[in-house]
Image 1 (cartoon, rainbow, N blue to C red):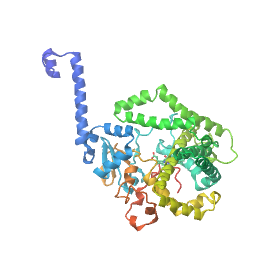
Image 2: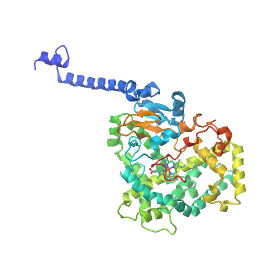
Image 3: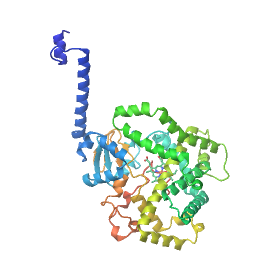
Image 4: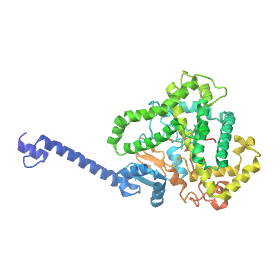
Length: 462
Ligand code: HEM
């Protein structure tokens, strides 16, 4: 090829046909194509029909900013108020707050053979040992694991744990009373976290973490809280683009710092699970029921690695969530003395002492149940969105076609704070759950704090 032909062919002009120029032109072309593609996706692509802030259609930076600043429960309700029940919150991401319909369409059970949304991999991370527990397992492993684990969460199994739950509740009450009698301030959130972690340790491994005794978070629990924040930060970097996702998975995720941090939490789990598997406690715990269904080494049962992953999940999923729900509800009760007085009256009329309280008769206290529901609505422990990806071939949600691979989710706090679902949404009104005519137009089925469908919360009691 002559210089002139090459110059013409590469469009370089002026006889500048050098390797550097070719590389530079190639890079410029890639940047141009990337830019044009971004513009196409933002303004002409299949998600361009959905409303949302223009910048969010173009880049994930606002999404990451919201994540890093922790303003999720402020930003997304405001976006839904402005743009409606479906909002494009990133180039490839839609947020829903339309109530029961998107809950069922995105998360609910589906007919066999119909395309099914799956968990968005950019949100969900595997357990430290790389072995899936129920949160990240594929459908086949998930249903195998869930069948085994459900046995430990049946009504019968929970009834069996009643003395344990009562013992810890009494301990929490005594501890709080001691502090109050001594004129000290009571950090209710901390007390509740100490209690739920002690309970989960005792339920899972037949040994508490002694946090209520110490009145302080144990090093393990501090590690768990730290790793929740760290995981959020890592997720923010990952979702920027494919390159940052690769860098996080290949380098940051495998760095010594990340490995040491992950190993600390996981190490505590491994140690306790192994210790528990070596002995039979003098009273049944969750693992007694799990091992009943799946003896170690049995075909189709849980592997030792799965036991570790599941224990590490239980310690996160069942503790901070419950403590958050109870502390949020306590906050709203203290802000609403009339409601607190009604609740106190119901409980003191029904029970002479703590000894009279049982799981069964507590569940029959209508006002108590309404207060807890309203607490979950006003202060959901998972206030964010748990994203799924739409399946190959796309799917319909709220009558709109969603193309394959789109990240879709119901945003909990936006749903529960929307006046179209709940009258006086920003106020605490347990009466709405008790058939009060003032709230007759409320969409009570928009509240799904434990999610719905095959992957809903295992700890939810019906
Ligand atoms: C108020 C307390 C709780 C709330 C609001 C809550 C909420 C949730 C939600 C929204 C999910 C779905 C996660 C997803 O789609 O990725 C979930 C899953 C799960 N939760 Fe809870 N949870 C609570 C308490 C508990 C408790 C006490 C346990 C007991 C260990 C527990 C164990 C689990 C497990 C194992 C899963 C995974 C289930 C599966 O994928 O099959 N949770 N929870």
